[in-house]
Image (cartoon, rainbow, N blue to C red):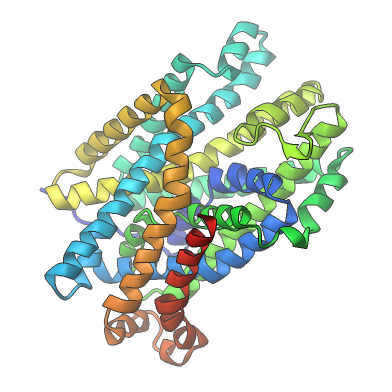
Length: 447
């Protein structure tokens, strides 16, 4: 039989768990890399605009659906459907999000495995194990399989312990550690030669790039990816939130934390690139960023090597930061299929977690053995197309299918005065009309 549904024990527990889901490699690796590839500050400006104008309203839509449904993504969407056609649509959207989360984790676990390997490398360097260091930092099938398995196993361990004892407890431990490491590394890098050039590139926008279609699509995908939208994750996390919580302030808190950490990560990575350039490491060629997808695995280790013994410590701290960020996100990705499996097939959580974890690891293995063909394809399919489209469909659900009176009652359970707020005056029609149209126009423009 299925176990009793879990709940977050505290408000801060939900905020840190949802922020942990949002704050991952998408913020600390993806965001700075995208910024460097797409005009620096111009990308930052567009990201901030889209994060608050499109991603936050979509985030609220998923959060409210989850809290109202008190179930997995498919059942939560079905509960606001009023006929068979809508319930079929609910299955497509909900299961599509679950599938998207599984595919995300299948490539995410590979990248996170790299982070674990690079975290171990400074230790092997310190003890003089040169061959081990080379193996850990060289792209190879065996290394990828081993560390993908280790990372997947860590995620399975946390998720199998449930909502309060697993997701919430570990989010409370990992998120503060992540923030402390990120701020410490940023302060250190900004004291190095060349950092100010990177700071200018990051903070002073080239306004001519703002309307570049590829920049806009990349910024939209980044905003949705970093907030875990379109994966059913926020619907599920919303279902674990108490009825007396104010969803508007909860959603705003998570969005602000996510955007702040993405911005802070840019303050670390982009100046670090220019520091590396000042040390003789080639970053750009003919104005184009080199090794964009593997930036943190090529440019930054080269920078750390120029620092001597200090570089070993900085390298360990940096890749530990990325490993922690990876884990806070992966636990939410695995929770999406696990929660559905537990409730749909009445399986114990531990068994469902093992089954879903093994299935996702199998997909990761297929990607590893067909790396050049599948890796980039799966990333593009999920982050640039799957997540925004499913997020758009959730907005359509809230705006066009869910009865406005029922929606208001759900919000009022955590805030009696919500009906008179600016949020209620703007958000329902904005989600109904502006978000779906804006997201659709971005895709049309990109093609």
